[in-house]
Length: 130
Image (cartoon, rainbow, N blue to C red):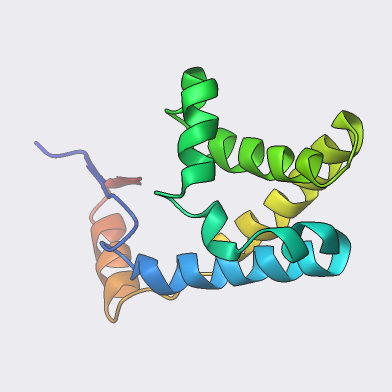
């Protein structure tokens, strides 16, 4: 008997690319407003997957490669230090910048009928997970 159904959320219940694009733009706007030296020196693409800066960070710290969060925060911190922020300031700004990113990352629009389907599964007594 099936008791639970789990979902991979991105591109299953909503389209991930628009969400990531929005979250990246939100992050960049936060950086521009709060740490303009970062946006003056770096491009938004420097923070993306596949960038040379990201590869360099993972090469230097392979122990964080498993976590997109740790990589993103580490990359932000490295960029902040590179433009002159202290370790403490960089940590603080990186965490605030990531908070702006993750808040926007959670702004999703479900595919048509996704909510109805989830509610139907739940009404059958199934445990829903992600």
